[in-house]
Image (tube, rainbow, N blue to C red; front, side):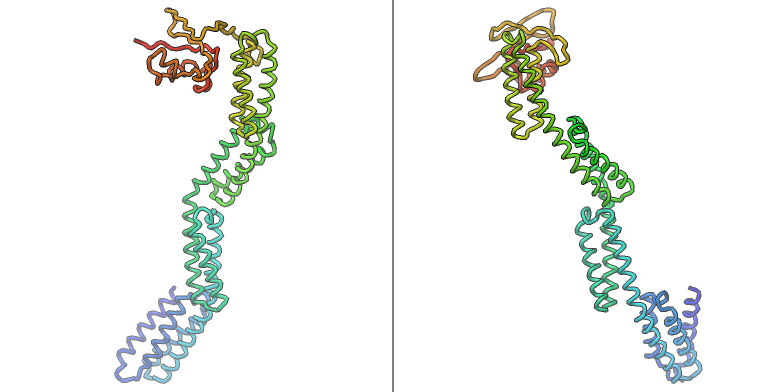
Length: 398
């Protein structure tokens, strides 16, 4: 830097002398101007880095030319200026290919860094623009169009850095993907995936760990690759677990209904037994249609009703005996209770429902939710109640 400042000072001094004696000496203005322009061009392509000797010699020759002008030796001044211009051109020609090559390498590195944060997915348009500009730079370099190659490489570098910044700004997408896979895996484990698909659970869990580590380090490409593997295995584990659980639950419901049919309460609880069989048939149909969650729900309902017929729970605990009256509509009013009791009846066309019960007791079917909330221990699905059930209808406060 000090050397460059000294050169500029000398050039300024020499130029001042040239102006002073310009009236008496024939100054080679054009040659000296060409040399100065050539030196500036060489400096723009970093000749001080790539061709320091040639650039230094060009600067020295130009200073020498100014000195010769001051010494009133115009011919030598012209010769020195021409030599300075030639040396500057040599510095330029030597530096430009090296600058273009290095800039292409910088752009290539920037594109790699953009790829590491998964810019091809998170900033696809910007990433493609960077790729195109880099390809153009390489093609131009091969054709020895070094100036054009350099400019294209500069554009490629800028676009690659922009793509990287955009991708980093979207790293929350990786966090969202990780959370989604975690939910899927948790659901799969609730349906027994560790038993039915242990290898897939293991792969999903291991890749989730890798994805979380990559997310923290902003290695988005690595993170998205890991989370995709985790998602694939979590989805497959859930599907396998649902399929096996649905089949197992159906077999369990069949067995429970067979026992219910042989129980001493089968005759007096025929409504519940028939409802259990209906749920079992529905579970079979939905399993065949690959509606595994619905099949499991129907099998669970069939199991619940089957054990209700037998008067016990799956663990063997006895439950209270069912009301055996068979009147179509039964209402028990007891002043000491804060609810009425309603026995669900069977109808061929219009099935009993909570809306009807609310309409009967409250005069407003839209209040059915009050009854549903009061009977959640019995009613799992508000759209599905069975004949024989005793529904408690809470009395409205005055």
